[in-house]
Each structure stands twice: as structure tokens, then as C-alpha cells.
Image 1 (cartoon, rainbow, N blue to C red):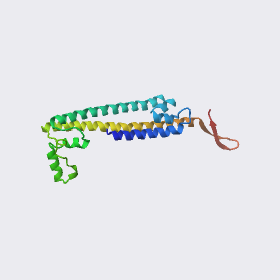
Image 2: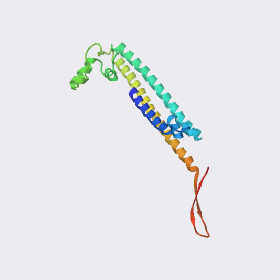
Image 3: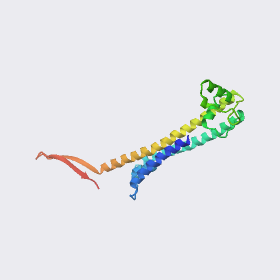
Image 4: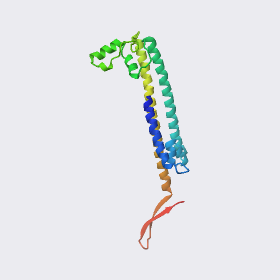
Length: 211
């Protein structure tokens, strides 16, 4: 998962939660909507919908475990494929971005890469053929093995990114659900009953507020 993407998603979550908290700062007890915005399921539990709140809590826990697991796995695989490239393609690993690792997985040597981009007149994408940037795979099989590791690492990053987005969404949905439950409970305190007087022929509604 791209660190910048995770930071952006978390900033959105923090801003969303801070906005809601700011609206309740003067109150001694946090509003259920605020609680659920901060911790999914908390607001539902405070409204005596424990089972419903537990569902949001389980989703949150599962997503956080997924983010931790996929991020850790991705980083392990990345270290593995970098070491693999250093051994089998004589790569210097320092100061390389993601594009470089993609490129060396698609070409046997730096010369093959540069020749291809020269034919396509993509001058800006060329690498200097020196010690820092050069590579030369010993076998095609090892290059393919490297590429599979690199792709798997990227897939784990994407999984973590989607999970981070789902965490933000879970907080928002939980807050919206808490607002819905709060409104339903509030409406239960208010009942409207129609009435009809047979002798006078009058009709109307009786508004009852339950305390």
C-alpha cells in the first residue's frame, strides 16, 4: 500500500471524526453518532443495539488485521525480491523507486530496456548505463521469478489500500446508522392517534409525548 494513500485516507477519517466531536464538545456525554464516528459500533451499543454494534466492531477489527497483515507481507516480499535481484541481476538496490523494479522485471538487461525506449523515442525514460542503474539477469527463469514476487507484493499493497478505504467507510456508515437508530428511538416517544366523534362528526389527531 502506498504510504501517501494510507495517510490521505487516515486524514479524511481524522477530519471527519474531529468535525463530529467539535459539535459535541460542550456536552458531557458524547452523542451516539459521535461515538460511532470514532469507534464503529460504540454508538449502537449506547443505544442498546449491542448485536448491531458488535457487527461494526467485528468489521473494523477484521479490516485492521487485514491492513496489518497485507502491509507486513508486502514489505517482506519486497525485501525478498530486492535481494533476489541483487543476487541474480547484479542490481544496486540503493535509491531505486517502484518504476525501476517494474522495468527490470520486463527486460533482461539495461541495454535491452534503453534500446526499446530509443526505438519508441521515449528519451526521458532512459537509464544511464552505469553501475548504479545497470542490471543483467543471469537467466530468464530468475527474471520471471522476480517479476512474480514483485507483482505479489504490489497486490498486497493494493489490498491494504482498499482495506484502509473500507475502514474510513465503516466509520461513516456506523455513524449514519447510529443517527438512524437515534431518530427511530426519538420517534417512538412521539405517537399520533386519529380520533372520530360519532355524535358530532368531528375528527382529528391526538398527539402523545411519552416521557
